[in-house]
Image (tube, rainbow, N blue to C red; front, side):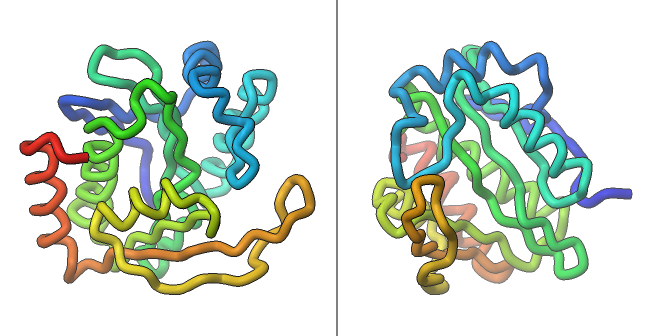
Length: 197
């Protein structure tokens, strides 16, 4: 049986549902909010490329290396995508990544709650040893967001990947390990109650 299995995660500000082809139109509208695909330092699908991106993520799910989600906001509107990726079942490790949100929900409680739900599921249901986060060196907003979660810097993989335009990507790697999870959970739960995101 593949690990992890598809699951729906429900919160107050967000719902994470297993990615499905029928989510395409909502995801196209969400990605148009902020024209997110124009950011050079990240790979976010364009409206024209959304169907292909859904197929890619579902293909990786079938291969056992990704578990993709569609993100819905508290009102049920499509808000973005996120995944468990680089799944390592033998070592009970996942990465939370390939995440993007419509501009209207960025810097709101939605991201904090999504990360809280994904981390809770990873550590408390999947018994993960560690959860990893990776981002481009120049994606400073993402780096600040990961650090606000309570993840610790593991290091920088220099010239790690070749980007779509040929530029080399330095990948910044963070993680939260199982022994840190209770404190991180308390921090994220408190942040949501205080509306700190």
